[in-house]
Length: 117
Image (cartoon, rainbow, N blue to C red):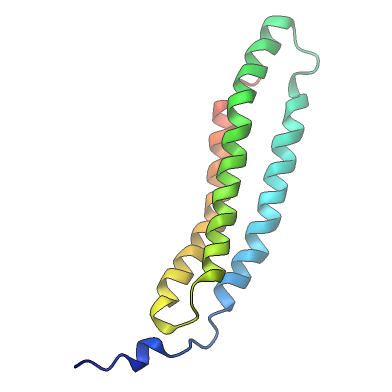
C-alpha cells in the first residue's frame, strides 16, 4: 500500500503563487476594462455609416472582453480555492500563471473584433 501522507501534507508557501497572480491579474483586469470601456468613445466624431459599423462590432467585442476578464478572475479564484496540499501545487501554479496571461490575450481578441475607425 503506497504511503500518501507526503501528498496530503500541507504545502508550505502555497499562498505565494496565488498572491503574485492576484497582484498581476486584478490591476491588469481593471486596466483592460477601463481601456475597453473608454474605447467606446473612439468613434464619437465618425460619420453615420462608420459609426454604425463601429457600434455593431463594439456591441459584440465588449461582452467578449467582459467574459474573458471574468474567466481570468475565475482562474484566480480557483487558484486560491484549491486545498493547500502538496499534491495541488502544480495545479495552483498553473492557475496562477494562466490568470494574468489570459488578460492580454482577451484584450487582443477584443481589439481584433472591433471595427476601428
